[in-house]
Structure formats: C-alpha cells, structure tokens
Length: 274
Image 1: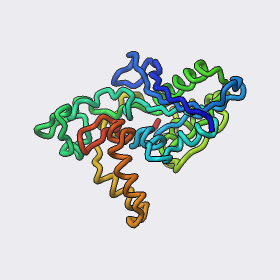
Image 2 (image 1 turned 45 degrees about the vertical axis):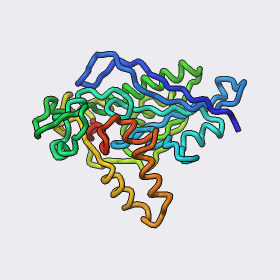
Image 3 (image 1 turned 45 degrees about the horizontal axis):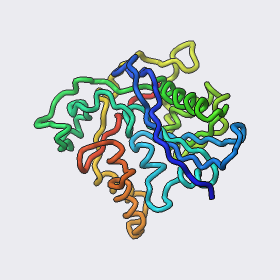
Image 4 (image 1 turned 60 degrees about the vertical axis):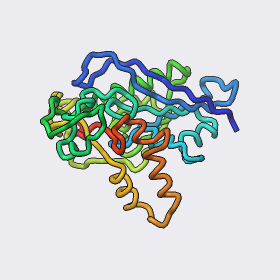
C-alpha cells in the first residue's frame, strides 16, 4: 500500500465573486498523495473532489472516522487526490459571511456564537447571493491550473457531490482538455434552470450581484443534519448515528470546516446558477 502524504494548499486567485471582486484570495485545498515513488508525470493520476450546496468538501470526502474517507481510499489506491472548497464554503474565504445580519432571516435565531453577535433580527447589509456559475468556474479553473503546474499533469479526474454538477459539468465542456473523466455523486440538476445569456453558450443570464436569494448565507444546526440523515438511513444503524456525530463534531467535521458557532454551521446560500 502506498504511503500517503497529506499537504494543505492555499491556491492564489483573483476573486470574481461580486462581494470581493478583484481582490486576491486563497482557496483552501487539501491533498492526499498516494502516488507510488518514481511515477512519471504522464502516469500520475490526479483526482479533484468538490462539495455540493451545503456540506463542505472535507465533511463529504475526508471525514476521518476510521477508513470512512473516500479521498484516503483513493490515495491508498495510488491516486493523488485534491479536495477544494469554493468561496463561501468550508475553509475558503467567505466574504460578507462574518456579519450575522447577512444570514437567511429564517435562520437568524440560530446565531449564538460571540464571533457572530446578533441580539435582535436585522436586515442584511449585503442583500445578494454570493456568486454564480461563472465565479464557480473561475475558482475551479484556478485550482485545476494550480494542480497541473504543481504536478506536471495535463488532465485531472473530477468527482463532484450534489450541486458540484453545476460547476464541474459545464467546466468539463468548456475545458475538455483539462478533464480526463468526470463522476457525479447524487448530482443535482434543474430542468427549468435559467438559459445562458442570449447569443452565448455559457454567458450569465443576469448581471451580478443578484438578489435571489437576498442574502449570502445559510445557518445550519446539528439537529437538522441528524433529521436529514435519519430520513435516509435506518435509526437502528449504530454506525450511522456515530457518523452523524463525527461528521458534525470530529476534527474534519462539517462544523469545524465552516468555523461556525457551537452547534451551528455556515454555508453560502444557494442562488440561481447562471
């Protein structure tokens, strides 16, 4: 079994998210490299994993409960595995999300941490969704380019969870020479989604910033995760209950990677992709 080396990366990027447009940011990426020694670049297999709408990447692919980590399984099989968070998720920058008033108004009663003081409900100071498909593609491209330069490879294999389909699918079409293969896990698809701007294949149909929804951030609670998990997995499964707790509270957990209030999590609000 290959020795797996873990590295934390901060990928430089000039933001195209309206809330911090044009500012330099660093996208957080974790790497588990299980590539056997003396593997030439043209034989190295690189995998890039991306989160969905509500759960950051480490809580999906690198939970750390025993061998319950898809990324590590791949690394032990000889792959070089990277996991990235888009802005507004996990450990990457979250512009306008340190202001508790910018939370979904229906979630503001969940604020309890001293770092997010909210003594009374308030209107958002940034009443817009955080990014759109283009900003997601830009960040994905920045990470792909970084990986190609770092490892001397021409292509990456992509794995995406849920709403990662909105980012990875169109990206693979636009940059097919960068993508060797593409796999979706429970992909999200909106059959009545917005068309691209008239006369374009991938142009945004509306200028940003956009107020759908009129806030950039959602807040979650462990109880909500437990309820959602319980709807999918039998309550008699002890291993399932243990994974709920670890997913929320472990060192690679959802809560830890979102730097949220005790008992709560922060993630970017799901806006219309387009």
